[in-house]
Picture 1 (spheres, rainbow, N blue to C red):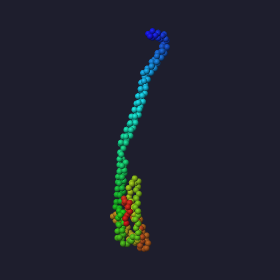
Picture 2: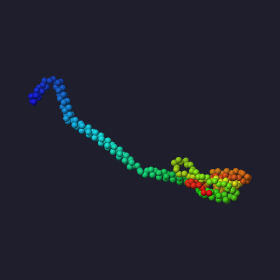
Picture 3: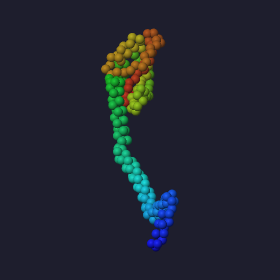
Picture 4: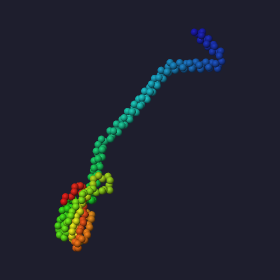
Length: 215
């Protein structure tokens, strides 16, 4: 064996520099290939497996983070939010209604008192005679605020009288002087048989109730 190695050394010494370089490079390539085959290849497979395992763990961690974010969002939502919103809307409508009642209904006569008051004034004015009375069905009062759900109702009466023009003036004046307010929608007097004429009177009041005026 020693003789073979010595022979190789002698043959190598006889080669030119370029040939020696070629042989060295070839030997180096063989050694690197052997190193990769017997040493690095098993580790390369393990490294690939570790990289794939890392990517799988990263994806699982990202999925867990997303689930935690969804759970955190669900926990932060108040389960009573819908009920609380409805309560707030009801309270807002109640305040608006109170304001409307304060501004529009202050001093108004109630529907159930309107007919007795009109009759009482008529009884005190002997010059007029009631010939007909119509109870007008109540109707909701339109509000400019579309968000308002609660409404006021308009209650009306239509009355026809026979009497002189002077008696009609006295009757209307007494209506305007009563403490409880009545809206006069129409006052129409036509002379039919001098000095008598026919008075057509339309009046109304407001209420939060839809019930008809009892007469």
